[in-house]
Amino acid sequence: MFAKLCRRHIPEAEFFHVVDESLIQDTIRAGRLRKVTMRRLVDQIASAETAGAGAVLVTCSSIGHGVTLAQQFFDIPILRIDEAMAEAAVRQASIIGVLATLRTTLDPTTALLREKAAEAGREVKLVECLCEEAFPAVLAGDTETHDRILRTALLEDLKDVDAIVLAQASMARVVATLAPGALRAPVLSSPKSAVLRARRALLLPDLERVAV
Image 1 (tube, rainbow, N blue to C red):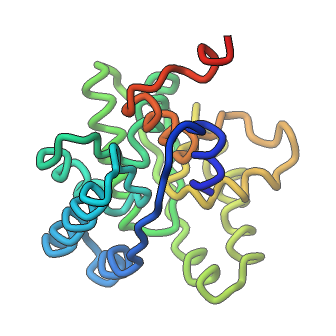
Image 2 (image 1 turned 45 degrees about the vertical axis):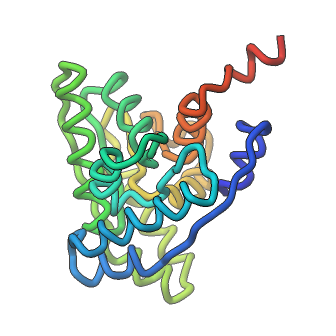
Image 3 (image 1 turned 90 degrees about the vertical axis):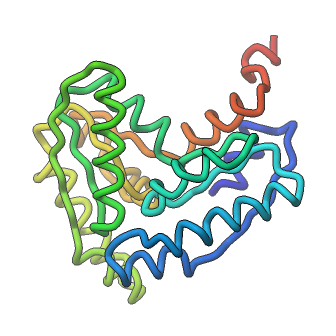
C-alpha cells in the first residue's frame, strides 16, 4: 500500500521499508506501549536516518506516542501515520466516530484526536467503537467474519456521527465494499494523508503545481 502511494504522490523520492512486527506484537501482548518498545522504535528510526532517509513515516498507530517522543531526537522529519488524518477530522466534524479492532490502537487514536482538537480550539465528541472480535478473526484468516463485524459497526454503531476515523489503515478495504451512499458521514483513513504530509515534510512542491 505505502509503496504504491509513494510512487503516486512522491515520484521524485526514493523510499525503503523497515519492518519489525515485534514492536506491535509486544504492544498487543502488554496492552500498552512499553518504554523498551519506544527505545527500539527510536533505534529503528536512527537506522533509517543512517541509511540516508530524509524523512521517516512510522506506519503503526499503536506506537504513535513513541513517534512523538522520537521527534525530539532527530533533525529530519519523523511523521506519525495518523496525525494528518486527526487534524482533518477535528477541522470538519464535531462528533467523530473512531473505529478500531484493538484497544492498543483505539486509545492512541482517541488521545491524538483530543490533542488536535485542543490545539485547534475545537470541542469534539468522540464515539469509540471497538470491534475486538474482528482482530482474532482476521488473524485466523477469516476475513469474511472480520469484514462483516466492521460493516455492522460502520452502518449501525456509527450511523449518527459527523465523520468516521479508521484507527487502522487496513479497514479502508471494508469501506470500499459498502454500497455508494450507505454511509452518511465521510470516512477518514490515514495512509494517503500521511504520504502527502511526508511530501510536504521533504519540502517538495505540490504535484499540481509541478504539473502546471
